[in-house]
Amino acid sequence: MTNRYMGFAAVYDRAGAVAFNQAAIEKVRATAANSGLAPGRCLDLACGTGNLAVALAREGWQVIGLDHSPAMLALARAKAEAAGVAVRWLEADMRGFTLEEPADLVTCFYDALNHLPARADLARTFRSVAAALRPGGLFLFDVSTEACFRNLWQDCLHLSETADHLFFAENTFDAKTGRGICRITGFTRRPDGLYERFEDTIEERCFTDEEIRAAARRSGLEVVGTEGWTPAVALEGVRNFRRLPATPEFNPDSRDQNLKTYWVLRRAGPPGSSGPACRRGSP
Image (cartoon, rainbow, N blue to C red):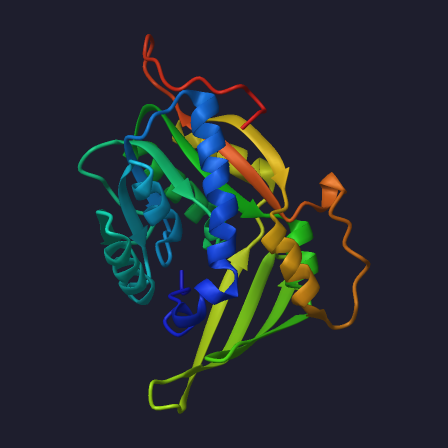
């Protein structure tokens, strides 16, 4: 997995991460309430710059934030310190990690699982998550759908410009292999007024529902519920991207065209164990 966000980390929050976090925290709150899950130990997997981890810590969760990018974690640490909350940060690969104590909840948002390059990597990640959860613990995540890759990745160009940064993202998507590549070139304003150039390449993979269900089954994770999901910030992305050539108009009201799928998984427990009760099919 090559995505390290070494340059892009500096502008990541301004490229939609903060706005997406609001949608994510609302999903977590609703699912926890429906499941009768009170704040306990939580692992935010692929935590990025710490938006969700800090928000959960504010709501009383004992949070560990795990990410593969040292640049993202540096920003996350600063964010937690500024917010006055305690979060433990781990630099690790989500395909192979261990926790000292089991978690009640694992979260993984903003298409982080799409960064995994193959089904084998998805299976490894799910096994690590299952081992990290207590029996009955929940795993909440989103993945980008094929509609997302066709509308936001396939031959798309994105421009983001503010007073202190400018970047271009050139996206491609190969429907045959399910692989998307985002090549970013950008400039960030330094304190002396000059601009520093950065480049990053982000690779993602489109996983089918069946691939996700198969990885869950083999890892001892039960699918409690799943639903199509198109956060408002994702629709903003549709408006901002320039598609070359133009693709058919995106219809946000079509379930087949949801940009994301939201999943609720639960770790299976031994006979007689009890975990959070979720309504099947209703995250």
